[in-house]
Length: 307
Image (cartoon, rainbow, N blue to C red):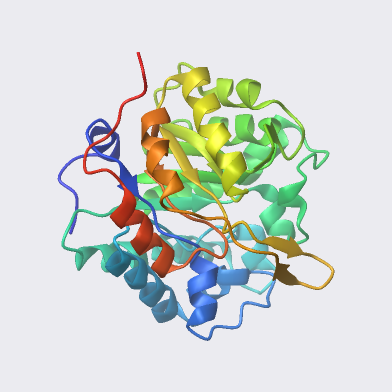
């Protein structure tokens, strides 16, 4: 169902459940994502798989779908022989696929255009380190073309997500200025710092006074770190908080596999709205079953933070 109000308006009255890990669901559907383009490869040769993954999350109760454009960049597509015009069309396709899945929902579903960090394009794990050696203006020039292409596709919001470094966050905010679409900004963190080492109060403070930013928070991090970050983001900005952690398992880059037990607990996440969270979902290794449990656990009305 297409929403009749903006996402910002909805956040004033509701706690909205996000989807989970798109790649996780694609792999569950049998897709091979061993490729530098990762899930974005399927925008080229398997769009029906992306649509099916979005639909699985809608059926689980997700009210916001994040597009399959996290690793989709003009540079990445160019390495595969895809020209700029076709790459722009593929970025718009990512929005179309999510929108089509949302149309069949019983409740309004919003679409967030995913804008991954520079490190995602490098496909070497550097989105979990930051500190690329590039300045704000260089990163802005990298991000602006695909932000413009995604915005032209008509999402309800742009998800500036898995940002490891406050330097890149500043670049993303500059790149999104004037695109005509609201944004949320979410960092990937460890403890109470960005992956590049900046304190979260400082990092969240970048959005102060920026009305284009309708939510700020964290994703692709441990659930326990996410819980602390909700409080910090609320205190630092007063804006609605977006939070979608990983399952709690750990990625072994050498073995290229996940290990450890999960700590993604929807019952514990029931308290996050009281601290300021308004957009709550999952990231890596969080599938439709856990999103369904999260949707069932969320309060029917928002619990506003004290004061």
